[in-house]
Length: 333
Ligand SMILES: Cc1ncc(C[n+]2csc(CCOP(=O)(O)OP(=O)(O)O)c2C)c(N)n1
Ligand code: SF4
Ligand SMILES: [Mg+2]
Image 1 (cartoon, rainbow, N blue to C red):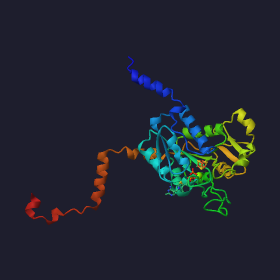
Image 2: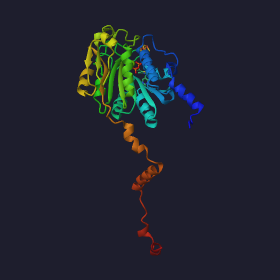
Image 3: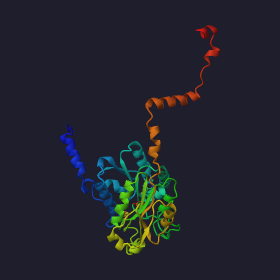
Image 4: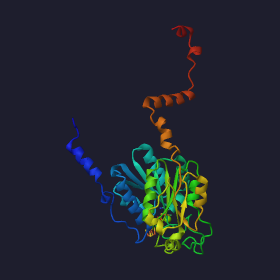
């Protein structure tokens, strides 16, 4: 006998037919031409194509232009504290492993104030999809040099040009224990951006995607040499990574066959900045997730936890020595 109610049938039908508009919320306040718009479009498309349920999806961010992301998704969201997107997301995932948890963080948010959380999040390898919107500047606060700003960047904090070599978010991530998925995309090749975002979402573990994101307001010409010369985008392809369409292959001829299991090669490629490597640099699906390792302790019953606490208290308890001090008749009783 079929016991499915009419309401359940309707709900199933609705779930099957979620469109882009079911993930869109409000009108983005980003500047015209801001790369964040392209990232938002790719992620909304991903949600539709993968059939993500809005009530089971969370976007967590820190502070910055890019961190406004959760406002534009019709899902759950947490626009958090500067640099703290990752620990908030880890908390959400730890208590609700059934949710799809995404993180949107800027280069200031992740690589500057949040750098310690970034390193530890990689090592914990929780099942999160992390997008680093790297515009190589502090956008929201109107142009201060970030750790990823190229040497010589003139900004409000470095009016004569920044003096330090830029930090490379890929080589840093690839250097941390338990890194399991590391990829790079550029906002101006939407097909590849989408494919990379999809592969990141499908990986179980922490997927770290650095997205080179244009900020026409404060860094207007920064990416022009790469934007106007397709040969300066190096597409990484492999049967275990991205597969390039014929049409895209005709435009982006600088291609490199790269097996994402090869960590040493990934590190070498990540250091290349003459041509921006785009694709999956590293992928190891075998790295265990922290939430899985902790599962056994999470399943402890209240009685077990209470017994554990009692045992700890007992360690420090000084018991009165009744047997030695009591009178003989008490001892007999
Ligand atoms: C604790 C704290 N320190 C500093 C700030 C000021 N602040 C807000 S956003 C930001 C930098 C944002 O840069 P980034 O993360 O690269 O994001 P973008 O705006 O470029 O997307 C800073 C320094 C803050 N909000 N909170
Ligand atoms: S200031 Fe830059 S990063 Fe911020 S919205 Fe404008 S273009 Fe985008
Ligand atoms: Mg930035």
